[in-house]
Length: 340
Image (cartoon, rainbow, N blue to C red):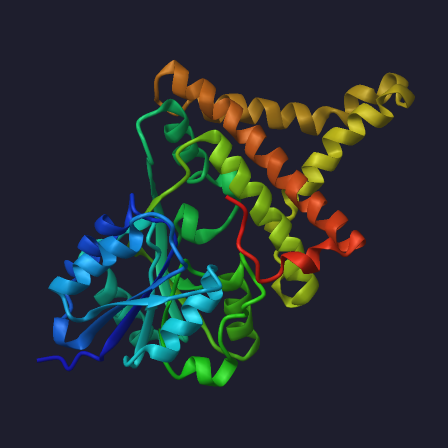
């Protein structure tokens, strides 16, 4: 019989009463011996029933424990969980997601077989609701035209990559490279993974390891998330220049390009058509991809609207982050919860 290592699953959470039970049900179904497992849920001062639901599960399963995170954001939650963990393997999970029964065993097998410092799989976006907008968000955030070449979102061959969602780690890696930076309300995973790579470690990816991620339910929710993430890309880059990845800043270039059309078109005279060619190509691509999706007409129209809205708001978030840097306001946001 294979001697399985003790694994500590850490789940940062805050106001997740709609999702925490399904997440825990999925974790309890993992094909991992319960005697080699603990589940640490680190609650960020939830104002809904999240803590009560967790306490109910903990009453039935003694290896489930509820910890408190007064800082209310993910990096301190992870650090609290890591310091309290007993396992030689640390597994971060997200309360907004569900996982197949073999998720844990596949992640740990990949971690050990590749001698990596971190291992993980790919997002499978699932609809967070029944509306056409939920379906459009699911489509756009799983398409390369929507999210670029992030392999964990669009699928790829197994191998070593620059990041994976959430992550499965050897416990001692945190003693070697440090913990999660508690200034980063967003992007703490990206920064930590870049730090691993800079220290000479590898991150292993296998698309057969699946995470069923519940994305935003509405276009407004997606755009709010995109704006915040893009701004935090800038703050993170300011603190840690080694986190730069070109794919995160293309929407800002696109947004500036569209603004520039309005500003300089009057001076281009007969050459204005040449300057607008990239925009026209983008519009045609939106039409082709949206209307070849094989869905009903309402959803296709929603997808057609979601692509440019998502890209423009992401670009606007990047530009806003740059303005924040210039004004100095960005420092006030470090380590602070996002406004809901």
